[in-house]
Image 1 (cartoon, rainbow, N blue to C red):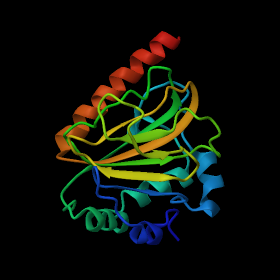
Image 2: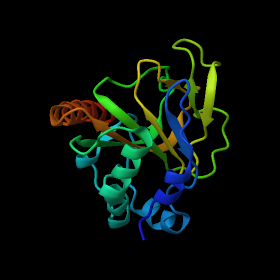
Image 3: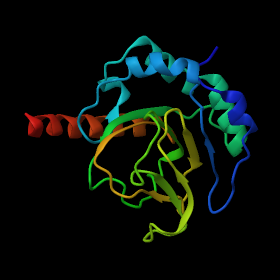
Image 4: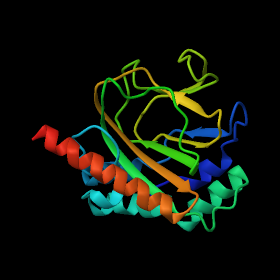
Length: 206
């Protein structure tokens, strides 16, 4: 059995306004969670780290294979009415959040679909909860709020109005980001950018 619940994903209605998105609590199956958490890469520094730069265990690798696999790709393509058959994927992982994180933004236009999978326990803080927004400058213009609870998935189609952000939070905040992107050149550029950024973060920490 896959560690993700594609059936529930398929059954969850797509919200179309103000941009297409859906939220699936428990997308990562509860019975797979303990092993995945043990195999989760150690990401003690802030920022996004590309998957090829990280070390992780077999259960986490199985999760990566599942979210990039044909079954989930087909389900996403059907849900958003988009052809992803020739689109490459890119995965980054975050382990901690800084006070300056969470500012309102839209994703790069080279990212077609954004998937966020949260891997924290039950989230108690009122901060650090991603908000989908109607405005580029008002964190209170909330369409939906997504607590980063363990196993929760948020997916949206990147559009000029796909604003999102969260109230600043400092501390551990595990999240996996998967994107289908326009072409392989985007993957190379983004992975290089993240690797350089991670290198200098490690230097500053040392």
